[in-house]
Image (cartoon, rainbow, N blue to C red; front, side, top):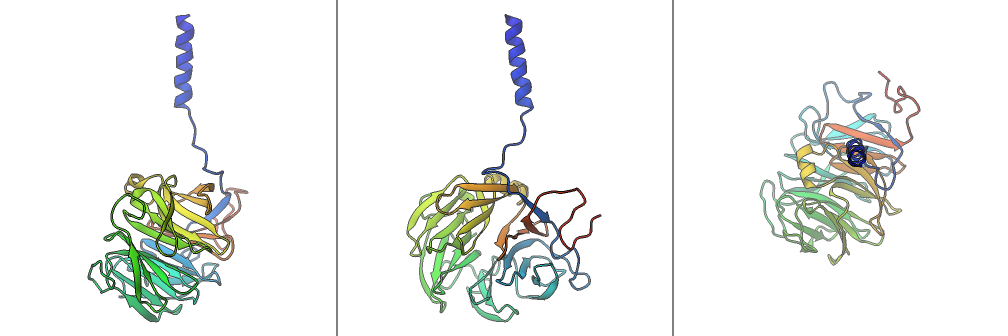
Length: 326
C-alpha cells in the first residue's frame, strides 16, 4: 500500500512539473505581426533609425505617426499604411517624448514628460498651441508634472493625464481653458498612482490606466467615479474606436512591467461594458493605436513599431506584405 501511495505522489509531482503554458485569456487572438514596421523595407532618409519608440498614432487615412526618443531620426516620423516614409518633424523640440494622439481635426497632440508640456500640431508639423511651462514642474492650472496622455470629447474639450509627477486628470475646454481636475496619489476611487493612458468611449465615459495601482478606472466626463477593473494588470497603452472596441497592451503587474522594461506583455481586447477579456496575444509594448481597418500598432521601447494584422501562420517563410523573407 505504501508503494501505491508513493507512486501516486510521484506521478502527481511529475504532472505538476510538466504543466504547460497558461491559456490566453478570452482565447487566442489570431493575428500576425510585422516586427519592424517603418524600417523594413527602409524608406527613411539614409542613416535614420528609431530610438525607443514611446508612442504611435493612426490618422483616418491609416497613416502612422511614430513618436520616438532616438537621435538618428526626427522625433515624429509619419508613414503610409504600407510603411512608406512620408514626412517628419520635431528635431530639437522635445526632451522626452511620451504620448501621441490625433484629434477629430487631424491635429497631432503629444506629451513630453521632461518638458512638462502638452503640444498640438497640424498633421504637417506646425505647432499650433502648447500647455505647461517648458521645463517647470507644477500642479497648478497652467503647469504639469510629467504629463502622459490626452483624450478628446466630441465637443473639443479635452483631458490630460498628469502623470508621473502628479496624480490627476485635468480637463480643458476646446479653447484650451482650464476647467477642472480630480485625483491625488492613493489607491482609493478617483485616486491614482501614475495615470498613464486615457481613452473615451461613445457614451463619453473615460477609461484611465492607473498603471502602478494595477487597474483601470472609469469616470464620466465630469470626473465622477463609475467603476474600476482590477483584473487587467498594469496597463500601458489603450485605444478605443467609434464602435467602442477597446484594446489594451498590459503587463501582469507593475513589478513585471518595471523588471521587464515593457517586454513580455500582452495585447488584450476588452468588452468596454463589462471589462471581460475577449482575447489576448503576447506582445511587448508601451503604446497601442488602432487603425481604421483591423490593424493594431504597438510602440515598443525596444525600438520597434509592431504592426499586427489578422491572420495565422500558413508557413514559416510567409512574411508580412512588403517584407522580404530571410
